[in-house]
Length: 297
Ligand SMILES: C[C@](O)(CO)[C@H](O)COP(=O)(O)OP(=O)(O)OC[C@H]1O[C@@H](n2ccc(N)nc2=O)[C@H](O)[C@@H]1O
Ligand SMILES: Nc1ncnc2c1ncn2[C@@H]1O[C@H](COP(=O)(O)OP(=O)(O)OP(=O)(O)O)[C@@H](O)[C@H]1O
Image (tube, rainbow, N blue to C red):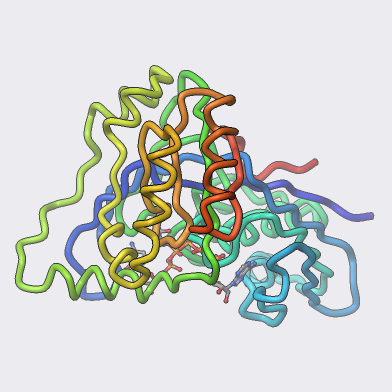
């Protein structure tokens, strides 16, 4: 018997970053939107804890105890006093170290898969608490849809989404380290008064209405300058997507994936083709949002 869980990537439609906290994290107003690019994690009985991974970026995924899927299995097993022996297979389609929460997605998916495989019967609140221990983005990967995350991004309030949004994601060559991007944010804002992070009401209204034009006007990412500072060539990708008709363009989370909002599915295809031909990215993917959170198949 095995259990397979499908889990989406995310884009941050508004990532407001406050000053660094004493614990090294930053307070956020983080508006997450799940997008229809998916990893799948399969949990199967095994004699020992083992992780395998397939997919175009599989070589960059650690298969040891640091893998977030393995850490999720250990965390759940410890809480329930059982052995974490399980084979976790990750079918990876979410770009690695791309700012789309791929590792977080696998952590959330492994948790749901092991809970089902082991009949642990954990409540949603218990699963969310374990997710928050694993990483700031992991709780959102569990619930999907759209949500405002405060604190370090782990304290979620779901947001209703009133329509479908069409996106193009330009996958960059190589990844960016999330701590390095936050570190660059600190360097760039040193000496300045960093305002309290907030989510603009116009953005939340755009999501609730499913209004693409209003969402395009309200998108924003406070980590974008830091990601561009570490990877200046991303400016060319943003320009290429905008020239191809994107309503808005931004760096996804800590980058280096860039996200383009399109008016409809046809426009998304046109933008993806133009980006693929531009030579400014490794590949271009179309995806719609919102997408459901970690779900047993
Ligand atoms: C950039 C985002 O993806 C936007 O959703 C997240 O804020 C990052 O979330 P994540 O990858 O789950 O990050 P974590 O694994 O919790 O933390 C990794 C590192 O990122 C930095 N970090 C993360 C979240 C946060 N609110 N402030 C931070 O400064 C810290 O250096 C931390 O040590
Ligand atoms: N299951 C996993 N998949 C991918 N990377 C993982 C996984 N578990 C641990 N990692 C480690 O995490 C690092 C960041 O990978 P990940 O794909 O989660 O980045 P990201 O999408 O930029 O994250 P975020 O958007 O949450 O900041 C990788 O370089 C890898 O070393």
